[in-house]
Amino acid sequence: MFRIGGFHLRVLGNTQMFNTLDQDVYTIKEWLRGAWRSLADSSLTAFEKREIRNYMKDAEIAVRAGLKRIADRERASRRTERVTDAGRHLDFRIIRLDA
Image (cartoon, rainbow, N blue to C red; front, top):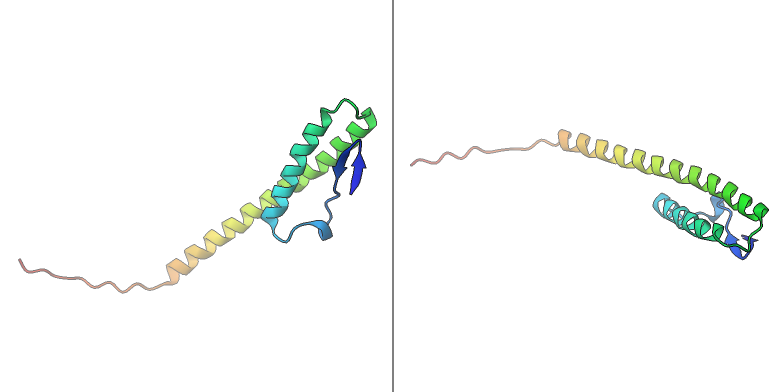
């Protein structure tokens, strides 16, 4: 964890990420919200702001990659559901009512 002008920045490495992809994306999004707020701090130097923006770019790339993996996972899950539904044999009985 780095401290830049009163703003805590956690480097997002594989060992520090949460267990699930959804939590990872949520955490990075929350970090980005805080980073945007910190950029408004007038006590930060130009260098500190530039460093935060550089970390933000890396975080945005990670969010995009995570969202893509989530979409791929959901797409694969839907595809699997369709295959299992199609493979199931349903036995229908026709009921004949005499009026």
